[in-house]
Length: 208
Image 1 (cartoon, rainbow, N blue to C red):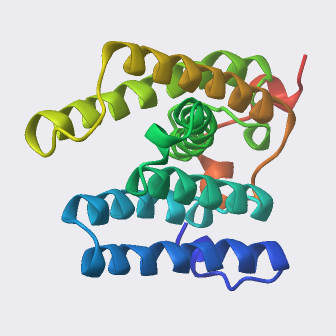
Image 2 (spheres, one colour):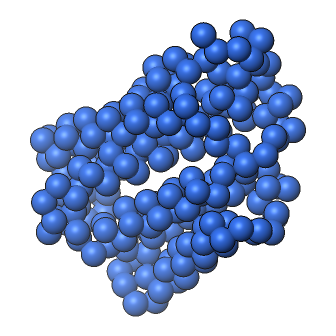
Image 3 (cartoon, one colour):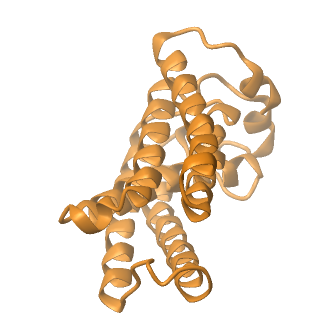
């Protein structure tokens, strides 16, 4: 992971992803200086998700998609787009949760929990089943964070039963799409020693 994180960008997509990471860091500083503390906190929450695709050595196109999605999701909250644009909240919950589910799946795989990608010989059915569950878990945690923010930080945070259920439904749909992606596409930029040594290929690396 350290080697991947420190690896210099080589392609236009890799430069673009790193540029988005720089934007994310500068945005946190700007929010801390000119906006409310809660806005700076929301911007800061995006930073781990911006860094993980590079640390995990994921392909540049997914890195760009992940960074752009996370930044849009975070700043849509800051600029209150979820309330002002109909359906924006559900769309971003679906797309962003799907992206985060893919990242979480790769983290679980690198930690030796379960093989979930084609890069380690996982059967295509495995991500199709497990990614929606991971996405629903992420959705549940996010809704808990929203509730805690509403209960203890600001009553301006929009929390209702219908909103919570709708967000989780679309988060689950995003997980289904993420599972289809992992069942069909290799995301590792290059073979990783951590990945190669963590888990043996399932079924000898063949796919039914």
